[in-house]
Length: 135
Image (tube, rainbow, N blue to C red):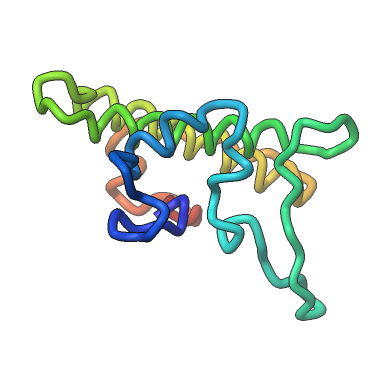
């Protein structure tokens, strides 16, 4: 989902698979394996814009987005290890994904001029007590 690639794509030949493709690219080449559609949006004027996730100075929030992508893809790699007994524990997955969600929500609200205080309590999320989008 995050790479835009499918396990049956032509790139996956000679023993290369999606799991190994992502694992080999992390963390330094995350920008090259991320689906460009995930890094684009339409402005209020209707113009398509790309998010610069490189860690260049002056790019507000870009290191946060890059680090979140690295973490998400890392979780995906950890959950797709061949042996089920070596896969990431689902509790750790949930904690990791919620942490990423928190960082992205804070970034979204900082960019809009205010910071959201998001409660990590399960009832808060499951009870619909927020106006935040789900990731």
